[in-house]
Length: 589
Image (cartoon, rainbow, N blue to C red; front, side, top):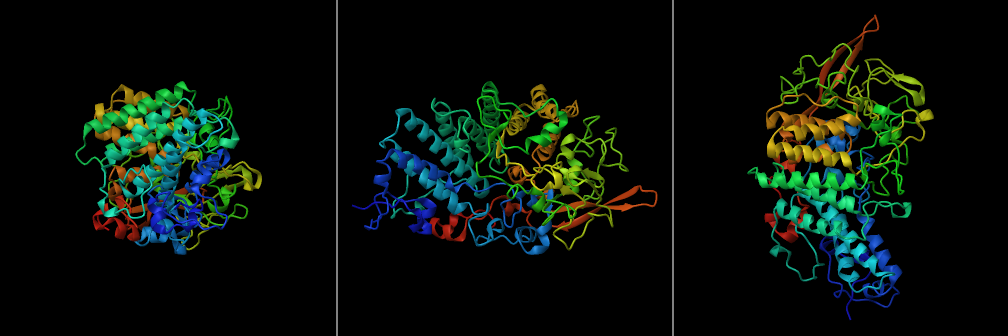
């Protein structure tokens, strides 16, 4: 009798990618456990489901070397640029089908390696789904819950792969050893989204699958809330320009309806944006500092998915890898906000943008902003009166840091000024403070927890799709108002009449709301605007005058080479292309 070993590490890379038939591999009498034995035991069946989660990567700063994906898009500049690491290769356009800068460390422990890991996760989920039908369970309700849970997890792996590599096969069965992979046909992204939607509808209809977990022992497991969010995410990608080249409006209708339905169902289940009355605008800052509390009545009702192992803060020391030089034991500046990000934060008093969201700059080097009139912005005091989310994200010249009891000066000659040859110093004139507690004494234990999915995303998914369907109507304004209200910001400018203008406002809102959260890296790809966002980034050079005033001048930090259309999708790894056929490779690779 031929069986598959439970110990997956003996499988070849080929099988790690696409899986195998449980009746194909020989078992030797060495004490290892076979699948038939696993799925004849209640505890081992549950343990196998647990093992399906082992392939989810760490988020946040777990790109090589303790870097963030945000450092590769226009909101941030990675201070490791001089170190020959991920950012160096990315900025220089060195990606190939044989070398992915996101995973160039030679180990699968970092976020960049998802092709093999996630396909293996899909394989294990499919093995579990197939065997749970006849496996013994402690109670029959567990069977339906476990199957729904594994299905959501499998489709989560699939969607993450498709975001990076484009639409890929919707696999529901382990492949046999003699399977001819050249016979596979590539689906459209809409077909992937429809596959996910069908699965997620079934998961949401499964009574035994909870909307949220209330026990810390189940932290990070799949839920109905994750399922309904995943359904919205997949359809938004299918409707976006990258995968909807004809602007098929039926796709946008689906994207709108899915996001609207998700918001309706989640709010009915008690989900809401995180806000503490006593904190006011600081609620947005506070939200990222705390692990989601799991109870029947949680304080954090916004978080939808916070992976149990995801601590992007390097063991609670966010300041260590995204701090400023005079911060205790800082290792590097990490991902430093760019002037492009700073420009995106509106003025609080008027709610108006500092620069026109539609035509942001008058020159190709972003040195001549197209300022909005009557916004309240003062170029001589550029960091005064901005959107509270600015202060929850950016450390700027003159910001007081309570945890270390000092003022951060980034002007030329200041205590934390620009140095372009040191990973410890900012390249941009700014430092990042999102995800770390600036009031913790000495900043010695001040890391937050990675929010992979949160309710705010669904509101902005809904607003984006609503605008694409019916233009800037009252619904779009009311949806965005929910996000702005939490930040204690006036709603966006009234009187917008064109889809194009509203689209620019929504894209700016996503840029500020989700700064550092890995959203924009994928957003600019699905919008197909890399040529507008990723050619270069700028910073702010500040000179202190004798009267203690400052002069501010913009400068180009560097030009990048990862902005043309081939960088919209990552190349299929060269070994997999050899298995599946050359026609699978993405354009330009």
